[in-house]
Length: 270
Image (cartoon, rainbow, N blue to C red; front, side, top):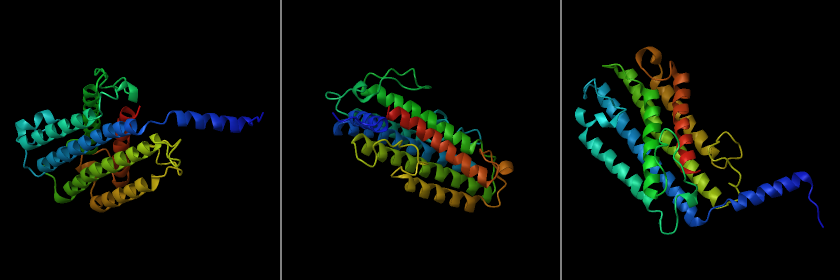
């Protein structure tokens, strides 16, 4: 009888566990749909909210407009954005519901509860899962935008306004890039691809993460763009964002997106 050394035995046990936790292709595809759904809705939400902020800074909207709260948009003339966001919400629900509920159930894929602050949603059907992800994405993106925008002073001069607009565009881009990269990683991991087994798909600081270079490039580009557009702007005095200078603005923008994507990833991939 061959006996394994304790270290090898532990590794073999881990390998068996990881293999046993692998999902079938239909299951992994369904979980990927859940991730794709919140990412697409989140991007649409952020695009429309940052556009609202831009128009408000330009004086095209009432100063009283709350660009972080879509329930106030219609009263401020943003009827097209209200309709567009409602359509994006419906697409989220439709994508989640396309998981063939006759074959799979949310519980069979690990979805049994909805995290706070949306824990009032009981997840028993794919309709429920769609509601959960919609609620979480709304809350998550609203928090990120509130952090990076605050309530921009009016009317802003060109340079601080352009700096704030750049922060908004990079928020949208980094949210989308980080979320899609996490989802690609998780899908390959759930199919048991060798390079992804055992990887924490949200930890891009791990040099062994196969997709870490994508995020490194995205961050380098974000930081370069913010530094270029915000040079010479007294962020702490002229804006109401989470940073006070270029360096702290870069860091707080990155943190706002990363906290959001991590929360949503945890909900979509329990």
